Image 1 (cartoon, rainbow, N blue to C red):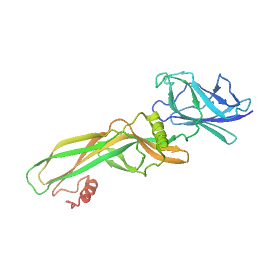
Image 2 (image 1 turned 60 degrees about the vertical axis):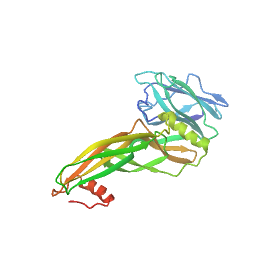
Image 3 (image 1 turned 180 degrees about the vertical axis):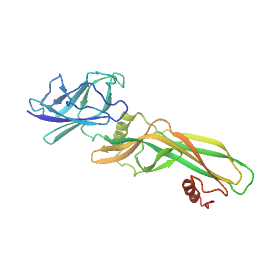
Image 4 (image 1 turned 30 degrees about the horizontal axis):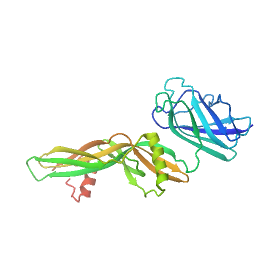
Length: 302
């Protein structure tokens, strides 16, 4: 009796998991499994939780040959029965067939279908998404120093922040995180341009957009202007930072992998002010201020 190992990856998006009864039917060039479906369930185990990969043994009474498609469905039982499936993989005796999905099986999402047949991935390698997480990526930061240390009168100025951004897929990684003005951000690090050709590059973008929604390269502008008043004998640093909630991870295509970033929603502008008054002890924010002052070639006043 042949045994096929079936692995299913549940997506890592809100509400992706399901407690409904899930069934699968395999179709090969030599035959197919029963149309009533094989129940995918492990006793005492919470199947198909968000972000999980679950593997099941599907036993058949005959060889199915080359697996050409799989039918996957659930009975829509229980609250929140909707299920987001990333992909299905079928294996036997060293042979593997991949079935990308990246869609909902839900009555209240997308096309509202809970019974879907997926063809095997052939030809151009199909991209797969892994290592997903949410980070707050820094788009832009501006630090401006307002020096009134040598004056006995208040100084009135303006702080202006202006930058551009676009909500497009970026093939970049993130590294050093920094704690600044109440939010942890990740610094975006560009990688070398992907040289895959137009069709293959489009397949990466389409896979990401099918999961996270459409992106676009329209350039948008963010502009903020704030009045500033610096007290007598004071130095004031104003820091403006623009961050954006971003889904990051790795997308694999064939034997190549690329870090990616997909912006989610609109960017958020935050501002912080650090000050020091002449003759006072070093401020609580001395370390942050010293970095900014040294970067500007200024002496440390305390």
